[in-house]
Length: 361
Image 1 (spheres, rainbow, N blue to C red):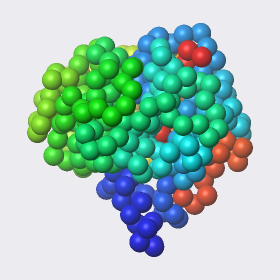
Image 2: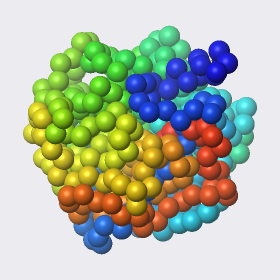
Image 3: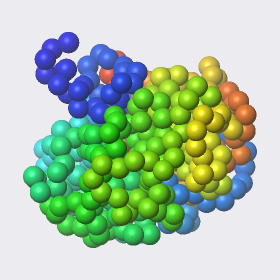
Image 4: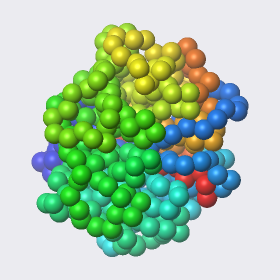
């Protein structure tokens, strides 16, 4: 591989030590939608805050190779080879190797972990943005301590933005109104290779995926700083963790983990107290699921539909009512957004890395 491509690939910290798809650099998203059951209540999720709302849904997907953010309309029902309703792309956007995306529906604000420029891009009025538009605000510069941002999570209760940044986690205040370069309130160093983060703001609890096949759980997250030690750790052969790359909580308080090594979503009961070498209560895996390189995830809080980004397929699929999943689940997606028209089709490289849902519009 040419030296330049090697450097680009090195930046994908969320994939470090994990299975990679190499052609050129990049990451492709696929969200698998498996119809498990109908009904059920709300959920907290990375890229989602607040109630479900009555909109038709806006789905945001970052395309790393194209340096673009794709915006799909009618995300709560969309399926098949659908075209994005809008694409944010061009020199003015300053997008460079965009990784995770996160939306705050209450203020229609989109955050992008812009790894290539060591920055966080903020697009206000996100649902109406299209084309070669400049970000409304940019968090960048030495004062921010940003170097290789790749994952994002939002504490709605305290208005805090958590950023996985290389080997550290930065916490920025006033996320819904932050307007430029500002120092983080806290910088946490867990001492391992971070695969993903998820903050449960209601309980001030932080979940951090350790690429060495563990999930570290930190209580009192908003007060943590410096070198941090987990209160509890999920690890061991029984967990079936295999290069964890994405985290979520469903409405029943179960922890959802996407795994790159052995493609699967492993689900653990009682996330608030889970610890040790425990077995998952549900596992979504197998040939029928089509999972190849499952990455980041987001939830529809009104339905518990899980949108899963899969780096090996090139699309977005949805697990319907994931809260009902039990035991071994080897089912085909109930819905998927995939195909040449989506702008996510795999070209031999991983093309997308982030996914966020606004169910209120």
